[in-house]
Image 1 (cartoon, rainbow, N blue to C red):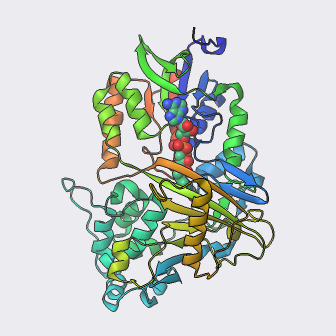
Image 2: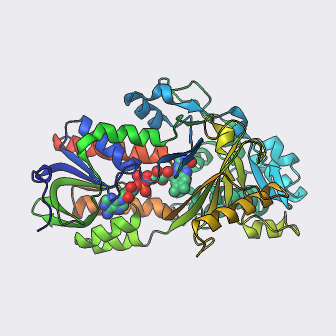
Length: 483
Ligand SMILES: Cc1cc2nc3c(=O)[nH]c(=O)nc-3n(C[C@H](O)[C@H](O)[C@H](O)COP(=O)(O)OP(=O)(O)OC[C@H]3O[C@@H](n4cnc5c(N)ncnc54)[C@H](O)[C@@H]3O)c2cc1C
């Protein structure tokens, strides 16, 4: 006999599958609107990749470390949760970022003047960057396929600057390849600026003010980075507390089937629930397998085709006085082909995609004088190595990047694997999702897709998506047309 739970006997308005930030935000919003909702989470806790862990005097993030201060959804949610006063801005010096180039770390040029004076670009490449504003951008016609980010930027600023800077950035954010991401699908705001201003530098030169009322939290420029003293996990923790018994942990949804006008969700332990509407706030693969059960094979195939990249994290905590970090946010390593073109050296590049220096960003991330570092490696790195060996390999790789002779021994370490955690918004992705939504609205009313492959991977976008879906479903519950 499967275990029964009387709380599950009554049909729900909405079942949310997955309690990452997207699912928690959707559940919270629905709960606030009086819907009978359950958020179902496979693991023993919610938060998904957005959880924080304190080890001794160090604080590490399992996934996201920061959001920009322009992240209005997060700030407003923090305000509603009573967390506005807990939001902290990163040290302004976090603006400084480093790039591996020519066998060592160099300061990344982040302004147009710095770009045209940097030693990292050839003269021809600098000329191409400097004259970008003189070449008006023509958006591709409607019947032209969406360009990749590499194609779009390559046309504007040349392949050299694109591969070096955009290549490194995409490795850092998506663990991905800038040649495989759709310019419009993955970077809609950049695309919008190009459309509006007819050029990249013209678009970047116009700082768009935030027209809305002041957002809760510190009054800092939109580009400053934010978090909470105990990490972004504070947000997930507050949402879980608000949801209370409406969040069911250790509740993996294994099957989704139709039950008349409702949906039936079968959990791994055999329990079942019925709900009028369902939000799938999980990745494309998990969503695909549920849609296949639900008799939606075409939609399932479309989701299964979405590529996701994984990342391996090694958090390292160095005792006071053992490692001096350069100032700033951290460093990125450009793709090998970019370094082969320019910036190659007899010194091989680090194996990491990049590393963050959390103790440079926020107080309390390491004991006074100590250093907290998070190294990001590609999926499959150090295969077969145990946790201790991975920490040693990562420390050696970091020492190599920082050009430190003696490999420092970390005082604490924490290794994490996130397989297939970051969906890759390839060319045509946004259109695929839009078509899928149209098809589901027709063939499977009440079923909504809410994973980070739908409305952007960034925390603020995932929260926005969760809220939007909740408002849509709550509106429908009262007979209000969806928007
Ligand atoms: C390493 C890393 C670093 C990042 N850094 C940043 C950053 O600095 N800033 C930023 O803005 N964004 C960052 N991101 C992106 C952002 O954190 C994520 O896109 C976002 O948190 C994903 O939230 P989610 O709710 O969609 O998914 P997830 O957090 O993946 O949550 C999905 C949840 O669903 C559960 N689940 C899966 N299948 C089932 C099932 N069948 N039944 C029930 N539950 C299920 C999982 O256990 C999980 O808890 C980062 C991402 C990663 C991986």
